[in-house]
Figure 1: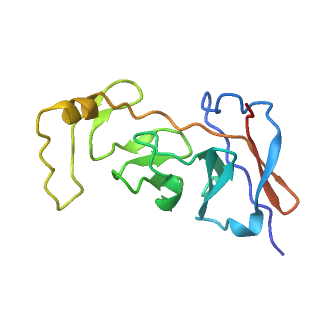
Figure 2 (figure 1 turned 45 degrees about the vertical axis):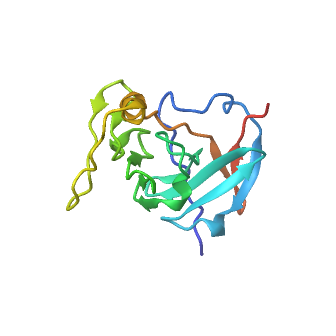
Length: 162
Protein backbone atom coordinates (compact mmCIF):
# COMPACT_ATOMS: atom_id res chain seq x y z
CA UNK A 1 0.00 0.00 0.00
CA UNK A 2 1.37 3.39 -0.96
CA UNK A 3 0.52 6.55 0.90
CA UNK A 4 -0.30 9.80 -0.79
CA UNK A 5 2.38 12.38 -0.05
CA UNK A 6 1.40 15.57 1.71
CA UNK A 7 1.76 19.06 0.32
CA UNK A 8 4.15 21.33 2.20
CA UNK A 9 2.61 24.56 3.47
CA UNK A 10 3.58 27.78 1.70
CA UNK A 11 5.31 30.26 4.02
CA UNK A 12 3.20 33.35 4.67
CA UNK A 13 3.55 36.04 2.02
CA UNK A 14 5.69 33.97 -0.37
CA UNK A 15 3.12 32.80 -2.93
CA UNK A 16 4.24 33.75 -6.45
CA UNK A 17 2.42 36.70 -7.99
CA UNK A 18 -0.64 35.50 -9.86
CA UNK A 19 -0.52 31.96 -8.44
CA UNK A 20 -3.38 32.40 -5.97
CA UNK A 21 -6.47 31.40 -7.85
CA UNK A 22 -4.51 30.24 -10.92
CA UNK A 23 -5.55 27.06 -12.67
CA UNK A 24 -3.88 23.85 -11.48
CA UNK A 25 -1.97 22.10 -14.26
CA UNK A 26 -0.63 18.53 -14.29
CA UNK A 27 3.08 18.55 -13.50
CA UNK A 28 4.35 15.08 -12.66
CA UNK A 29 3.23 11.65 -11.51
CA UNK A 30 3.56 11.19 -7.75
CA UNK A 31 5.70 8.10 -8.41
CA UNK A 32 8.28 10.29 -10.22
CA UNK A 33 8.99 12.35 -7.08
CA UNK A 34 9.99 10.07 -4.20
CA UNK A 35 10.91 11.57 -0.81
CA UNK A 36 14.16 13.55 -1.07
CA UNK A 37 13.89 14.02 -4.85
CA UNK A 38 13.70 17.21 -6.92
CA UNK A 39 12.49 17.62 -10.50
CA UNK A 40 12.16 20.54 -12.90
CA UNK A 41 8.84 20.92 -14.69
CA UNK A 42 8.28 23.56 -17.34
CA UNK A 43 5.09 25.43 -18.15
CA UNK A 44 5.65 27.56 -21.28
CA UNK A 45 8.67 29.66 -20.23
CA UNK A 46 8.25 29.09 -16.46
CA UNK A 47 10.57 26.50 -14.90
CA UNK A 48 9.26 25.18 -11.57
CA UNK A 49 11.17 23.07 -9.05
CA UNK A 50 9.13 20.33 -7.41
CA UNK A 51 10.84 19.11 -4.25
CA UNK A 52 9.67 16.28 -2.02
CA UNK A 53 10.97 17.69 1.26
CA UNK A 54 10.67 16.29 4.76
CA UNK A 55 7.63 18.62 5.15
CA UNK A 56 5.93 17.44 1.95
CA UNK A 57 5.95 18.52 -1.68
CA UNK A 58 6.82 22.14 -2.45
CA UNK A 59 6.89 24.05 -5.74
CA UNK A 60 9.10 27.11 -6.27
CA UNK A 61 10.77 28.85 -9.18
CA UNK A 62 13.61 26.63 -10.40
CA UNK A 63 16.00 29.54 -10.03
CA UNK A 64 18.33 30.39 -7.24
CA UNK A 65 17.12 33.69 -5.76
CA UNK A 66 20.73 34.91 -5.98
CA UNK A 67 21.80 34.55 -9.64
CA UNK A 68 19.11 32.31 -11.15
CA UNK A 69 21.05 29.02 -11.33
CA UNK A 70 18.74 25.98 -11.60
CA UNK A 71 18.18 24.65 -8.08
CA UNK A 72 16.93 21.36 -9.57
CA UNK A 73 20.54 20.29 -10.20
CA UNK A 74 21.53 21.11 -6.62
CA UNK A 75 21.02 18.93 -3.55
CA UNK A 76 18.08 18.53 -1.19
CA UNK A 77 18.57 17.62 2.47
CA UNK A 78 15.31 17.61 4.40
CA UNK A 79 13.94 21.06 3.55
CA UNK A 80 17.29 22.64 2.65
CA UNK A 81 18.16 23.01 -1.03
CA UNK A 82 21.76 23.81 -2.07
CA UNK A 83 22.48 25.96 -5.09
CA UNK A 84 25.06 24.32 -7.38
CA UNK A 85 26.56 27.64 -8.49
CA UNK A 86 27.62 29.62 -5.40
CA UNK A 87 26.86 27.20 -2.51
CA UNK A 88 23.91 29.17 -1.15
CA UNK A 89 21.40 27.20 0.90
CA UNK A 90 17.70 27.90 1.14
CA UNK A 91 15.07 26.54 3.52
CA UNK A 92 12.00 25.44 1.61
CA UNK A 93 10.03 25.40 4.89
CA UNK A 94 10.57 29.12 5.52
CA UNK A 95 11.68 30.58 2.17
CA UNK A 96 14.76 32.08 3.81
CA UNK A 97 18.45 31.61 2.99
CA UNK A 98 20.24 29.52 5.61
CA UNK A 99 23.66 30.14 4.07
CA UNK A 100 24.50 33.07 1.85
CA UNK A 101 26.16 32.37 -1.51
CA UNK A 102 29.98 32.38 -1.57
CA UNK A 103 29.89 35.67 -3.48
CA UNK A 104 28.32 37.46 -0.52
CA UNK A 105 25.94 40.33 -1.11
CA UNK A 106 22.72 41.60 0.38
CA UNK A 107 20.18 39.34 2.01
CA UNK A 108 16.44 39.89 1.46
CA UNK A 109 16.36 42.40 4.34
CA UNK A 110 19.27 44.41 2.88
CA UNK A 111 22.00 43.25 5.31
CA UNK A 112 25.42 42.85 3.65
CA UNK A 113 27.28 39.51 3.91
CA UNK A 114 30.93 39.39 2.79
CA UNK A 115 32.48 36.91 0.36
CA UNK A 116 33.27 33.58 2.05
CA UNK A 117 34.71 30.16 1.16
CA UNK A 118 33.60 26.63 2.03
CA UNK A 119 35.47 25.01 4.91
CA UNK A 120 39.04 24.08 3.98
CA UNK A 121 39.31 26.60 1.12
CA UNK A 122 40.63 30.13 1.10
CA UNK A 123 38.19 32.85 0.05
CA UNK A 124 38.85 34.10 -3.46
CA UNK A 125 40.10 37.66 -3.49
CA UNK A 126 37.50 40.16 -4.55
CA UNK A 127 39.51 42.69 -6.57
CA UNK A 128 37.99 46.15 -6.70
CA UNK A 129 36.03 47.09 -9.76
CA UNK A 130 32.62 46.92 -11.33
CA UNK A 131 32.14 43.16 -10.74
CA UNK A 132 32.94 43.48 -7.03
CA UNK A 133 30.59 46.44 -6.76
CA UNK A 134 27.83 44.46 -8.53
CA UNK A 135 28.30 41.53 -6.11
CA UNK A 136 28.01 43.89 -3.14
CA UNK A 137 24.66 45.14 -4.46
CA UNK A 138 23.26 41.75 -5.53
CA UNK A 139 20.30 40.98 -3.30
CA UNK A 140 19.34 37.41 -2.48
CA UNK A 141 15.56 37.33 -2.71
CA UNK A 142 13.15 35.15 -0.80
CA UNK A 143 11.83 32.09 -2.58
CA UNK A 144 8.46 32.28 -4.35
CA UNK A 145 6.05 29.35 -4.12
CA UNK A 146 3.30 27.89 -6.27
CA UNK A 147 0.29 26.10 -4.77
CA UNK A 148 0.44 22.31 -5.16
CA UNK A 149 -2.23 19.63 -4.92
CA UNK A 150 -2.28 15.87 -5.33
CA UNK A 151 -5.06 14.56 -7.56
CA UNK A 152 -5.12 10.79 -7.80
CA UNK A 153 -1.61 9.77 -8.89
CA UNK A 154 -0.64 13.22 -10.16
CA UNK A 155 1.00 16.32 -8.73
CA UNK A 156 -0.59 19.53 -10.00
CA UNK A 157 0.74 23.07 -9.68
CA UNK A 158 -1.20 26.36 -9.83
CA UNK A 159 0.56 28.29 -12.56
CA UNK A 160 -0.23 31.92 -13.39
CA UNK A 161 -0.92 32.60 -17.06
CA UNK A 162 -0.16 35.79 -18.93
